[in-house]
Image (cartoon, rainbow, N blue to C red; front, side, top):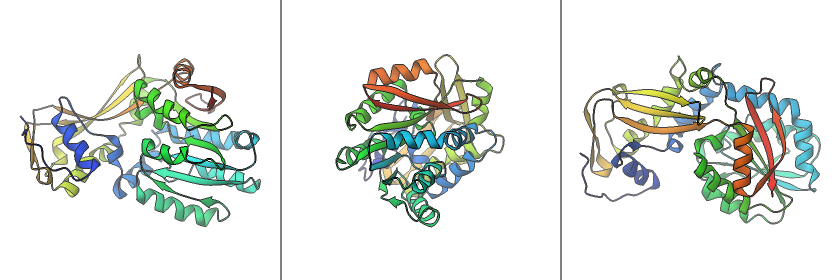
Amino acid sequence: MQEKTIPVLNSAFEEEVYEGLMAFPKYLSSKYFYDEIGDKLFQDIMAMPEYYLTNCEFNILKKHKELITSIFHSEGDSFSLFELGAGDGKKTKILLEHLSKKNIAFDYRPIDISQNALHQLVASANKELPNVEINPIQGTYFDTLKNIAEEEEKRKVILFLGSNIGNLLHPQAVDFLKKVCAVLNDEDLVFMGFDQKKNPQQILDAYNDKAGITEAFNKNILTRINTEMDANFNLDKFIHWEVYDPETGTAKSYLVSKEEQDVTIKSLDLKVHFDTWESIHTEISQKYDDKVVQWLAEQSGLKITAQFSDDQNFYKNYIFKKA
């Protein structure tokens, strides 16, 4: 049984770790996978042969960049290109390069929770695309929507790539998309990636690679707690476990305790007990089809104006406007 004394919590990270590990069942937020180590691990994941999502979206952006950028430009002259969860920006640079070559007036505003990722992105983009104006914003999706709402001088095009929307269950996704809709004017656009339902084994393989990179990525949240909160998680005493429900399209990631154990988190003055095979839920990765995406749009006050698929129909990018 966890101790009941509420400690002094000095950051959102500490608050969410405390709440998640005191809950039953236990959970931790996947947004805390990301630090300098986590950023590198996710770049490694995107390069894995099993992780089809990256290549599929690359395929879409390379194949349809002319049409996509023309749609971005068709609503008016100058615009700001906001990207939620920009990461290393490799895929986005396809569009940035094409917009720059076409001399289309825009500025790029990458948003990420990881300051390290933003530093790397800005440094590489300044070198590769010196003519592109870049204005990075550090923060979470929900927090930075306020920044986007304040932009009234230019049209807004909001990118949300990599099927990051899949980290939200449908009720959360509707709430998030409603907030996105609220910051849009009639001429603004949203360009968003949705991983499609497919062979369940292919989905499981993408989140449980044989090299163990995804396992290390998930366990990085325990490493961060050890480092930043003076805890003593033994990573070897936990296994990474992935499940997928083809009916709901929901993939879930867990860290599972291999034995009964106690973990001490000194900065929280907390001792956390784990039973043998007790789990910590760390992430969901939702999969979609056209009907579900249409439903999400309708529930959120949006309408689909265009969609693009990769050659295998594994993945789709949709363009939305305010309904």
